[in-house]
Length: 125
Image (cartoon, rainbow, N blue to C red; front, side, top):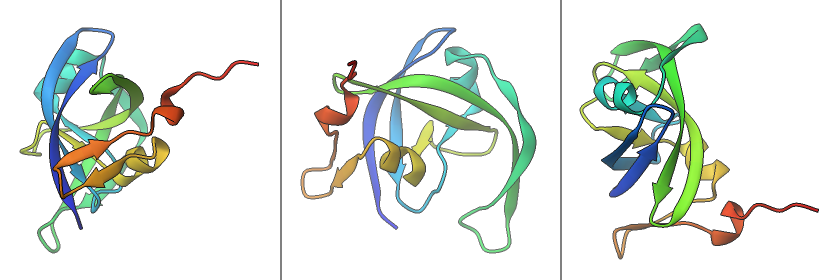
C-alpha cells in the first residue's frame, strides 16, 4: 500500500472546497468525509449499501451514500464518484479505481501526483 497527500479543489453542484486528499493505493474506492460532501454536492443514496473492511482487522463499515463531483489536481479537471463516510479522518481519500480511470501516477520521490494531460483532453471528431 502506498500513500501520498496532495491538495485538490472539489467543485460540485453546491459549491467549491479545497481539501487535502490522501491518494491511497490500498483503497479500492474513493471516499469523502460527510461535512466536505455536504458543502460540495447533493448527497444521494446508493442503489444498495456497500460494506468495506477498515484498516483494523475484522472492523467493517457500511456506506449507503455518494456524491459525484469534479475535482482539480493543479489545472487538470477530473470527475468521479465519492462514497460518503461519517468515520474517515481524512477529508478525501482517492482510491485505485479513480487513479486508474484517470491514469494518475504517484511520484514518491517528489511527493506529487502526476496527471497525464492527454487523459484530460476532450476529443471530438
